[in-house]
Image (tube, rainbow, N blue to C red):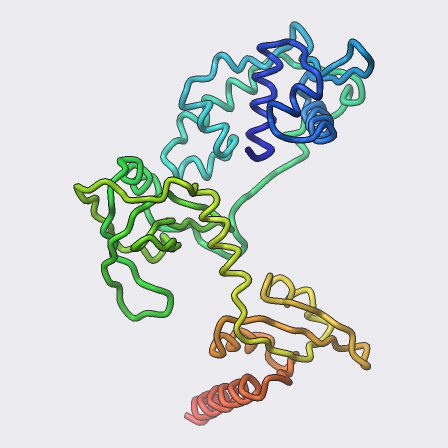
Length: 324
């Protein structure tokens, strides 16, 4: 259970029991007492009427007369809050915008409360704004809600999918676990002959629901598969490229290269740094061309030669265009 789910479950438990000890909550949610106390502090900072009292007769208490009315949530609204909170943009993609709106309204309608250090502070939703979309990316055009509806039928899918860099698409028979969102993009997580795969919905052309039950492994979950696939993708480095980079664009390089940037070291010259970048294959070194004259690839020789060849081709093409 991640933290947002645990916080919501804590409120339900406290509302049912009025008061529980930190040890009881820690045992129920499988975390430490210190984590429970940090959760209580987070709830209080979010203007939720929860306090922790020390001592023999102390415990974690939801103040009477100021409860969050979770009992008014419908099943679908509670499921929405557990999954995504009240992210309306994400809910619209999933086709559950109506339930999200009503859940948010019910939470907003609870009794105002001020206690201790939160008294006199501005409401949290006035000073915090969250946008889960990735930078410089368009929303996926795929119908996420329709795919989720079909995945929930528990059947195999035949998908028409174009792999990255491939000129065309081809069909695949998959056993779907569900969909996964990261960095503003959506992915289908599925087994192919028992092996996990991740398919970008932006390149999913079409799918057909088959009249066969999906054959998934009972000992793994969607969340675990998604985490492992993403981690393996980020850590798959078959080639390590060393380059000298202008310090003026170091911040840009960190943003663009992300987890591919393995190290940044000072050089003898204060205006440059030495970076190490990990790639799955040599051809991916093309990514470094966007840093133009601000970078020099020094190792390995194959990467340096590829950059030299590409820049000569680009220079020739643009020189010919200028002479027309």
